[in-house]
Amino acid sequence: MSNTYFFCDFYHSGWQNATDECNMNTDAIPCPMMIDATGLSTPLDCPYGLMCFTIGMSCTPATLAPTDVPSLTPSSAAPTTYSPTSSPIAADDEVNLWFCGSDFQEANELCGQWCRSGEHTDCPQGQKCFKNTGCNATKLNFTISYDEGLISELPSIAPTTYKPTDDQNPSDYYCFDSWTDASYDGDCGLPCPGGQNSECPTGQFCYGPIPLCNPVYKVGVSDKWCGSTFEDMASKCSSECPGGSDEECGEGEKCWSDSPCALKQSALADLEALEGKLWCGKNYKDLVENCPMECPGGSDDECEGDMICFDMSTEEMSCNETGVGIKDPVDPLRKYYSL
Image 1 (cartoon, rainbow, N blue to C red):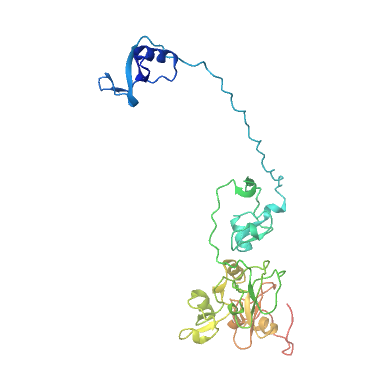
Image 2 (image 1 turned 45 degrees about the horizontal axis):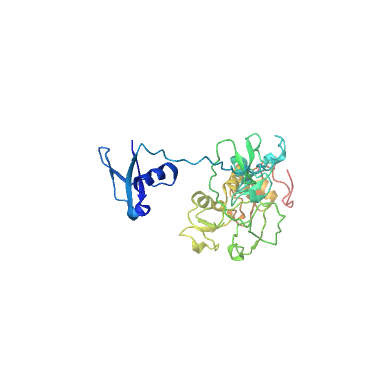
């Protein structure tokens, strides 16, 4: 096989110089070649005025002695340290029972999001952290993992899908008849998420935040609805009358307050538990002697005349038939007595 190299004719040394260059100069320049489809090589014109000489077997290209290249100093990354894992939680620890929901019933039924810190901020918007639920994080295999140093709660079971909540009042503002502070933990009034008195029924005012009360009403829904009777209104929930006027309703209908149409599902469930236990009477004596009529929605507006609605769910006996008392009449001058 021949070796062919460029040779600059400036030196006028010809073939011998090309041979010397090939044998001694590691930077000797090979001639450019064109190789056709059959593999035949044809020298091309040399650049810069150089001439190409065929050296043949007279050249053993020079190679430099190997040079030791120092290796880079080995580098090792600093050892990774992870955030310490949280201390184990026993199955009977009360922390296990803290879960999120729009109300206690939802938190108890879903067992969806564990609020380990006990703070509402652990929960999705519109939900709160409720304690002493029937859920247990340890038994449900909820674990604590760390993502870039931040605690995140990851259930080892299939992820929970939350049902939509019907209450979006993140600032916890509610309507009440009189001033109510943040420590109040009874039933919430109608939500007034904008913090404005104009969002409340006539005679009520917007207070907040009141984070501990039990949400009862849906947001943006009036507690006054139209119907020919209270039962008719409650069964169809067809139209609101937020101003409280019968003129807002259709022909033959009137405006009823304290409507169950405004209640959340949990509050409706509480009403269902009272079914058959809510009765009207002018006073307690009239109630037990006559059982005049029912007030299934728990509202005085369902009662006729000057009667009011009584809750008989805690009594040993309650009315069960209209017009049929559960106590024999006594001295009509006596207005009240207990069973």
